[in-house]
Length: 114
Image 1 (spheres, rainbow, N blue to C red):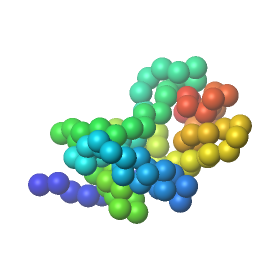
Image 2 (cartoon, rainbow, N blue to C red):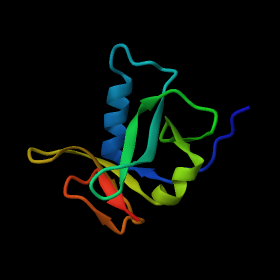
Image 3 (spheres, rainbow, N blue to C red):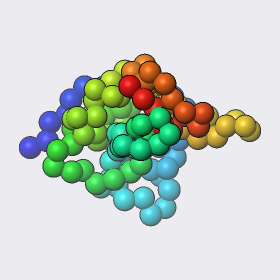
Image 4 (cartoon, one colour):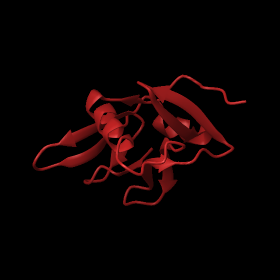
């Protein structure tokens, strides 16, 4: 039995629109979830994980505006309160992480320290 929990993160309207666009692409595996997490590495100590993936046994499942999301329970302490945004400007295109738990981050915004 799967239990959905309330979301520890937020997605901006721009991010929701981009994830929906990606999910509607030909060949998208509808059995996959949006995975948000962290991994060791990067210039500041931890890097963000963002992509579509199969659910794993120790994942928590939640839904944001109809988008099914999975995250490892242990990652919540690093990501609680974070917002994922999407920018499609000329100078910066891609997903942006706004993490209130980060004590510092690198210039590219994909790595942080707590």
